[in-house]
Image 1 (cartoon, rainbow over the protein chains, first blue to last red):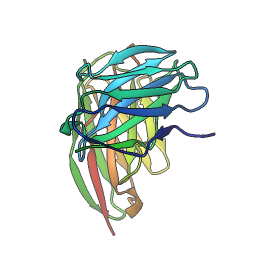
Image 2 (tube, one colour):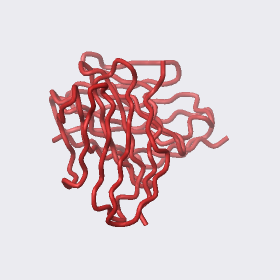
Image 3 (cartoon, each protein chain N blue to C red):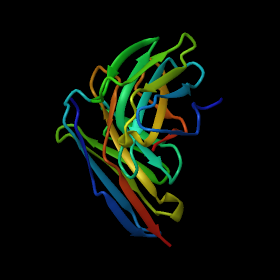
Image 4 (cartoon, chains in turn cyan, orange):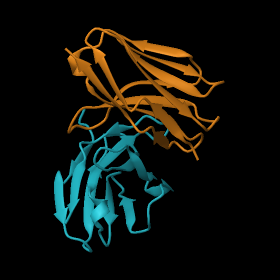
Length: 112
Length: 112
């Protein structure tokens, strides 16, 4: 069974630009969760999508947004990038009827 | 919302000794408590989880205990090995939301 995949592995942007990160969940999983992990820090919840709908979002500004496609893959968009957005962005997937989450390898976003 | 506190932030043990990491949570409706291990540069991996209908769960050298009255849960690793060195995160769900809140992580170092 293939695990959660994310692309790209690394992304370098300059301040003010937009970044798009992608996630493909484990087959059969309908939920996708996005987290931000700044260097040396913990996992901060960003967004949760299930069955194409945004179910919950964390304490992040509106320039962090995303969507979930009919095949349950998801993308995270970060507009007007700031230096402090530099972090590892992790995606996790799960079945809609349970809390268990499985993580992808992450996308390392660097904002210069 | 849920608040999860995790202690200690760093832990060094000799190989073969036991390691204990403790977490407390605030939402009395929480009923799912996973633990993740994140090795350097890798994704968080689910190592064990417990639901509120049990007080203890064991998997080889790893065990988790849960005290719902006191709202705390702990990870116990026995006979530690150098490959146990990693950052460990506890988490708790927010009842009814299928969103987990993570602790701040414990960096475990097992000294050979």
